[in-house]
Image 1 (cartoon, helix red, strand yellow):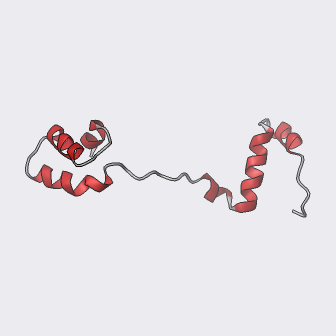
Image 2 (cartoon, one colour):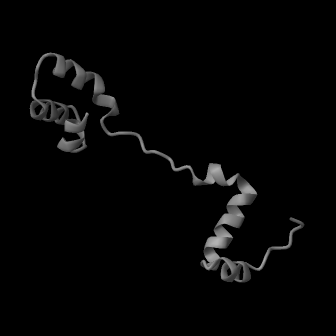
Image 3 (tube, helix red, strand yellow):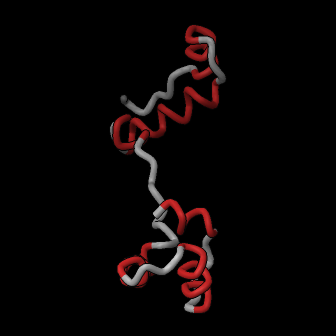
Amino acid sequence: MTGIKPNFADIARRYNCDYRTVKRYYDLGKEKTLEEASKRRVPPSLIENYKSIIEDKLKLGCSVRSIYYFIQLKGYQGSYTTVKRY
């Protein structure tokens, strides 16, 4: 582009969407490609730091609930369900 911004409202009417959506994708297109912009960051798992402890306890035959209480004492902030799914 040569510094002239497109008419976002007109484009939005053509594609039946909000002008802010058109503007957002226009601004993203200047910075990076659409594929890069649409990728979402995956937050790190709360259980990541405790995987080795969990695996050791599972090898010893401990129940999931006892493992959950044990890693809570070590500072785990996640839920019981997360531990159970692991």
